[in-house]
Amino acid sequence: MRLATTFLILTFLIIACKKDESDPAENGPTINIISPTSQDMPATGSIVEINTAITDDDEVHDVTINITSDYSADPASIEIIFDHIHNTVFNVDTSFIAEIPSGSMANYTIQISAEDMSGNTNSESVTFHVMD
Image (cartoon, rainbow, N blue to C red):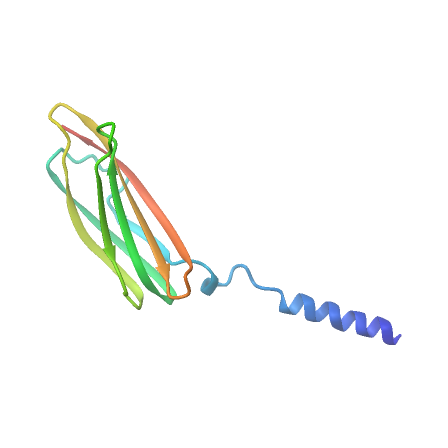
């Protein structure tokens, strides 16, 4: 009987101490890209607004935005970095000019990566079409 009780107690402790994989503190920041959307089709030379809400209960530490275009063999690239944010909510409100050669079409991709104070990361992206 004593062995069975000890086994039950150990089993309970193992199950009770198992890490909860859905714990938000163990996940990277939540990234909600508000604009642009994949349905946007700005003309070349247009200002493209980037609006994003980033949240994390362990505080957002760093955010990196990478903007690429496929209109040439060597894609254009823009990188925007926000460092040492230290807030649970960070709203991105920035923009860039989408330019491609006359008579061209291209896809632009915006990838937003975020890291919280514990080193957990997450990223989201959106791709949209630019035309002349």
